[in-house]
Length: 263
Image 1 (cartoon, helix red, strand yellow):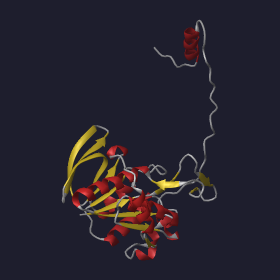
Image 2 (cartoon, rainbow, N blue to C red):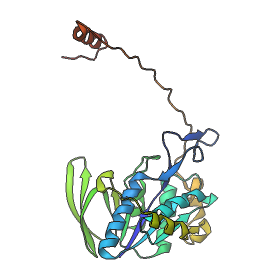
Image 3 (tube, rainbow, N blue to C red):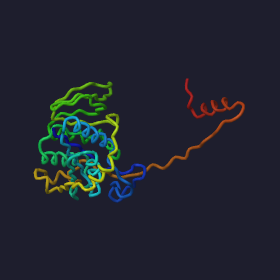
Image 4 (cartoon, rainbow, N blue to C red):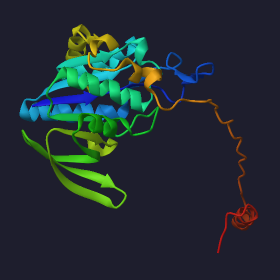
């Protein structure tokens, strides 16, 4: 069984700044980490490896610093890490990103299951998993909150929809996007971290994706772009404390004046 996990390096959203000239995220302005939703995907792959003896390959696209994401995945028992890193990939939206990832997956070869988070905390689009499934022509199981059973050729899972939770069985090959409820990622041991530090991460450029059309990569292959970026001003909130006799009545009067009481 071969499992491929898609993982992204994301910045600390609370501290990140933006490059106004290019309207891109300044990824050097804040600490980075593996996308939390993708970490659940890595954990799911690790559990399947322990149960079924699967081989796990993790793929990421980003700058050279994104190698840390793959080292993290290897520390969590991934067998292989591949980083797509090239100026030709820069400025990619989800259309171009999914195109590059799908090309990389085809280069890797046969797979049974692709796992990724339902979304990333920086982009928040939730489009990569579905787009990769479409490009590869395989089934998609989105918003999976629980994987209840896995065999060599299929899995049973719980997916979350607007109508409620559904129990679904799907056969491989398959793309699964997981929610934060999918599992609780375990921490790697010190021994695992030291092993991962020595592990080699493969680095692929656009030239390594032989079947990829350069015009569909990076900014050139993107259908959307950021026109401008602005950070909303911090709102100053007024605090008021009601004490003493009649405080309840004064509170009600204040809420009524603010239009917060109805009926």
